[in-house]
Amino acid sequence: MNSELKAIFFDVGNTLLFPNRERIHAPLAERGIRPDAELLRDLERRIKNEFDNLMINDGSHDHSFWLMFYSQFIKEIGFNDDKLRDQLVAGVRDSGNWDQILPGTRERLLAIGRRYRLGVISNADGRIEDVLRLRDCRLFPMRRRFGFDRVREAAPGDIPLGDGKSEG
Image (spheres, rainbow, N blue to C red):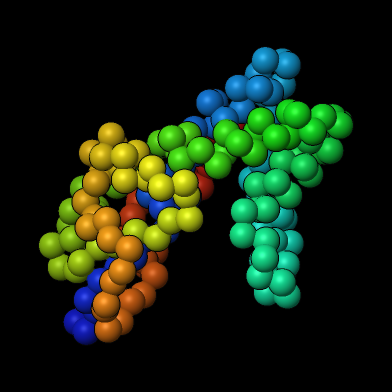
């Protein structure tokens, strides 16, 4: 790593913490539906590209990613149920449902934190600090303002990535 580097910021969602799909998808389970993990990964990639294009052209879509995602998901599994979609969107937007952490993350963060200041970036509902504390990963100064000279995204290998498969 570059010796001029002073801090590393991590985006919390899908980097440090991952969604608890069992809890988020409880409304589906109540209807006897178990989403296919491959469908969810594929759909997330497709919607992310679509969402990014919307953000580039019209930056007013801040929280609509999950609405787009679950609208398309409901359609692809053959449902037309706005109430179900809204339950899923509410569940995924609840930061308490983003409580899955990969093994070894805390240890890697401690190692990185010996050399650099660490920070988090999150657009969640403000309770991420509590979730990180519960997972014994509250290793960041939780401040709203930082004044660092230079910042870079975490590089591959900074945090163990697992096998790229999520629980469905």
